[in-house]
Length: 482
Image 1 (cartoon, rainbow, N blue to C red):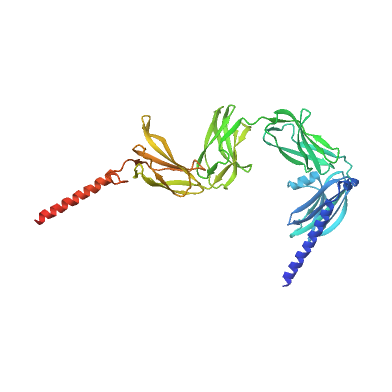
Image 2: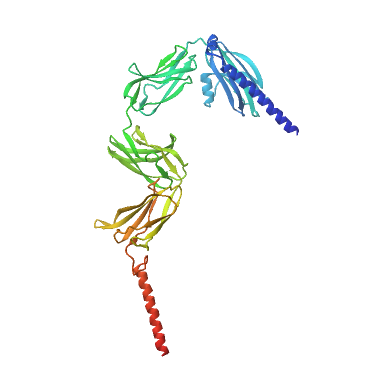
């Protein structure tokens, strides 16, 4: 019971501790922009309570030209180290390299003032690295004092070497100093405004924009980012918006359903001579695996490749293929999104090789299936002899049913006008997936034989032969008795 009471008390303390920090943060965030502008050199940075395992750290950073006031506490009480690092030293340290800094405290709680030796961005690091240290929750804050820099915005991306096709997503990356919480982003071409990318977005240094397909091609584009609360703005370097890729993926088409273990044709067009094509599989815009590393193409005409979908993928409907020039990876295109499912298949059990169907009569077409087959189409074919082919030519005859449930059977009345033949076969195919199909064995369609529908002449002959032999034996027996 004592341990349980201690646990409950500990949870209550943590709850009160977190709530007090949350209230403080909410009050701080609700301060108006005007109030912040009245205190341009006092930049407080407060972080919510953060859990730290052994060797974990938390940090607060900001620009300081005079000093940084800091404070922290831990719950449960745990001795940690507090350091002050310049931006470069912090970058080295987080990259795994040795770094020098200023040790401010080795305690479980405390506060202090760090007089910065040089102006710049400073990191106050709270590091739970003491030998034998346990999990603790640290609450920490810092106020960075002294920032006489004027408001400014600096665009890092797009840069001068950026070339992006219409329809693709342009990444816009920037940094700002005292430029407010929101910015406007515009697109310019040769000094003229083309469009407002966004009239207001968070000044968080990152934005992505999908370039409209009707955008004019050119090499003289620039992005302009303007602060909505100060006079700060910046233009990016000139960059290029280029035409659509010279490769167009034809198949798989949008909403195609491909099954693991089955083979499919990948087809594409290209408008320039490309000799070596590479194909990669993506899911949700993330690379999964290479499908083809060197498909010989060598021309400006439709190309194709056969792909057997591997087992072990996650069934989903957000896969697509990237087809690109092996020797020029910037020439590429993505297919439409398509689905990959579990393996599926169809096996026809009737008609079979011994079946004899009579025109005008009704028969059951039967099949077995597995996996997500969906509805099916059933067609009738005939193998027609041809002098150029040893085994004949599969010739379409008619569609038995265009769309029916995959329930394993279909009742079919054989048309009366079908010619006699012993080389008919039935084909059943999933409507979702052309690769999921099966053909029956060849069977016969023809008139009834000796009034016994559905039986072959050979079977009837055997029955008659047995009858004759039986009658002959009876006659001999009677003669012997006489």
